Length: 308
Image (cartoon, rainbow, N blue to C red; front, side, top):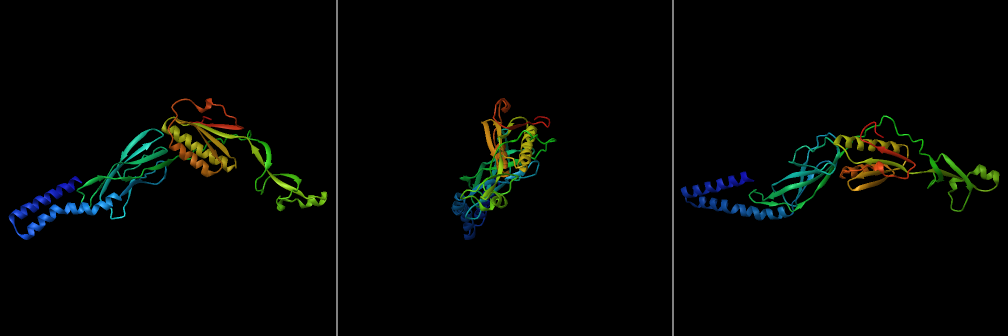
């Protein structure tokens, strides 16, 4: 912008010199145009500047270690006027702050949420001589996702036994069944016709599913960047492992906001849990291992490979 103002001042000075040396109608018109053109540009730019929107842009989910760059996304109902802004990146996990220019690489060396806000956003008239602060800005959150960290030995699930059995909602396939009398409203497809013919009454083959106790994963959201990469990577891998075994579970994490609890029933729940933790502040003291939970199976995720 300063360069454009300098060029404009030089153009005005040149017009004055030209008018002083050649005092004809053409030099006079040229001088008037140079003096009034910036105001005409400002009037023509007002609509575009007031409708101008700006926000930081990048992929929402970013693989750890990638070369993703931050950009500016702008929009206006009129031709886009000149604009400028930096992007301030805040990482809630560590409290680190970066101020980047458009085109700079995002800090993706370690996993974590990156909250992006515009820093000193400015929009100019079409000539670039008048500068104003952008009224409409939008912040964005980018997620540097951890890489699943496979454990050498899968967790021992032998203690995770069914406490009792219950009818499977909606029926369908099941390894265990219960034989009982048919009641009005039962599914006709579940009638055991051979047994019904033997006993002389309609008998139902009802699929049963195990009603297990609470499966619990615990974790302390603290430690160095490398330890956080390991913890969240192990949580992601272990959670997918359990879901692959059709085992629902709960995740309880000690954070700077206290203990956060997440119920995981499908992969979408696990991804949402990890994404939430990426944007949470670290726990300052204590450990969730000091708390007592009622669970049929409990596993603590530590930062080191041999910690369980």
